[in-house]
Image (spheres, one colour):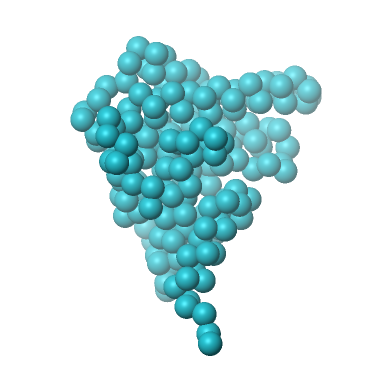
Length: 201
C-alpha cells in the first residue's frame, strides 16, 4: 500500500529542520524564486527577530516581513512557505530550548570574510525583525538588552583586517558566540510568561 504523501512531506520537513546546510540552500533558492533581495543570512536574522518579538508570528507574517514578493515561477509561494515553516519551527525549538543549540544560519565552508559578512547581514536582519514586530505585552528591552542591541548595530558594520586570517577567525568566532548568546538572552527576557503561548508546532 502506498504511503501517505502528507506523512512523507512532514518527514521531509522535519529532516530539513535538522540540516542547516540544506535549510540554507533551500532558503537561498526560495528567496530567489520569490524575487526577494535578502540573503539567506539576512532573512534568517529577520525571521529570528520577528519570532523573538512575537513567538506567535506565523508563516504569512514572516514572509510579509521580507517585503513585496515577485514570484518568478508558478508554485514558488507554496514551496517557499514550506521552507519558512521549517525555519519557524526550528527557531522556536532552538530559542526556547538551549540544548538544541541556536545559532545564526551562516555559510560554513566559505572564507572567513564571507562568514563575517553573513554575520553582519544576519545581525542587521535581526534588528529589523525585532524592531518591526509588535512585542507580546508591549514589553520593552531592559538596559542589558538595549546594550546588546547597540553592540549588534556595531557588529552589523564589521570589517575584518585584510591578510590576517588567524586573527580574523578568532574575532569572528567571538562575535558569533556573542550574537548567539545575546539573542538567547533577549528571547528569554521577552518570552511570554505563559510558555503555552510559544507555539512549537
